[in-house]
Image 1 (cartoon, rainbow, N blue to C red):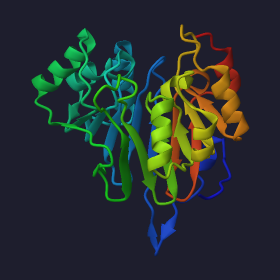
Image 2 (image 1 turned 180 degrees about the vertical axis):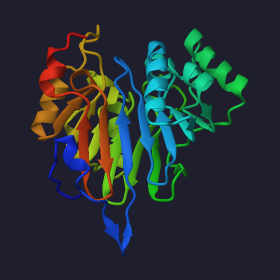
Image 3 (image 1 turned 30 degrees about the vertical axis):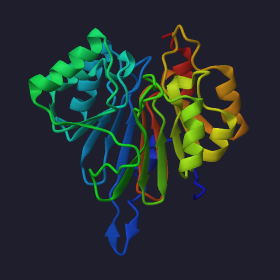
Length: 287
């Protein structure tokens, strides 16, 4: 894993030309951590201009994500990945499916008896969207320049969070690890099975006490840690221990609660962070 100089002033990003390989420009990938409050929604614009939405936040976030996509002139999603059926991950997806063409869905396969889940499934049926169940160890083929590997998904007797789809995304020399809401038991299993080193990690379960052991984070050894949560949440996210663990491994911490929408821009060699808000603006905001 390379060492990087992190530039935090967004204007500098547009002064740096794309990396060249064998005389050809290396296309850019953008990963958007959309601020949906207490929940997850991640948009990936791949180097080949494919669009992947990972989760849709809670129900009230649906319109915000639709507007966010519209601002990027996105009116079609090549793929939606629903990591697990909790309301803060699939709640906004029905409204998104009503408004934007979706070509495919990958789901954890975990069944859940809630109105939110049935609304999600019914909308898939109404729109006749092809849906597949994720398989542990499989590669998701959406862009030949990317490796997207499923490291965890539903297995018998796992609860919703334990069944979360965990993804490792590799673009040339840049690795992202997206942990959804998995727990320490899954983290231990992943340590035994995979190379987890990644430049950027989306911390599991919004910084909950259920996840992010120091041993696991040491294995990942990220430069950047993203935490998605609402400043006003009843769960105490993120817990002090997770923040202390991230400080122990010297990771830069970015949260949607403080920075709002966060964009990672990479050419496969270097990456840059584009936060919507400054830390002062984010901290002064009350919600």
